[in-house]
Length: 207
Image (cartoon, rainbow, N blue to C red):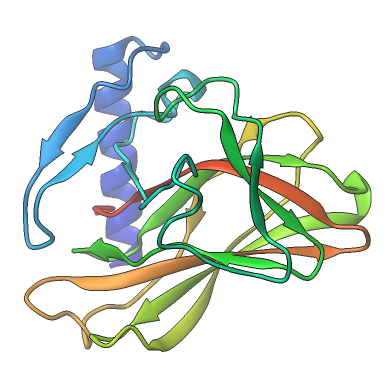
């Protein structure tokens, strides 16, 4: 399933790059329905040659004060927006000091392998710190039933897009009505780790 999914994604990538000429463009928002209901999709990373469509997680731009997020250990909303403003005008982002964590609101997914992508800046000791992302599979009551790594991010002190973080979730046994809920948890790790993130997206339809 993972191999077929990877090939399918590459095929879509080639076709879409040909259609867009491989260049940057607008977000090209679309509305997609399905088992999870209507969702707004856009291409926020097109200028970085990623033409896949993503959905912004609940308050993924933090303009509502991280509404629906679970913050711990000093994680808090601060002033400062990623400069490309991919989710629209804004002036806030999320600060993650060492020992903190931040978990997104539940994200509805319909197929295997959801992908998370976001903007980040390393405010700590660049060579000694990183940002860990985990995917949390939730049951119908919101309880975590499975935790899997979705990537470890390293980067410089200026704003930059993360690489896609892939969570290889086998949802076969937990799908209910063709859908399941996943949350993503961010945790700074390493000596002097301090991070800032903004505009958190998920590709909920990775084939």
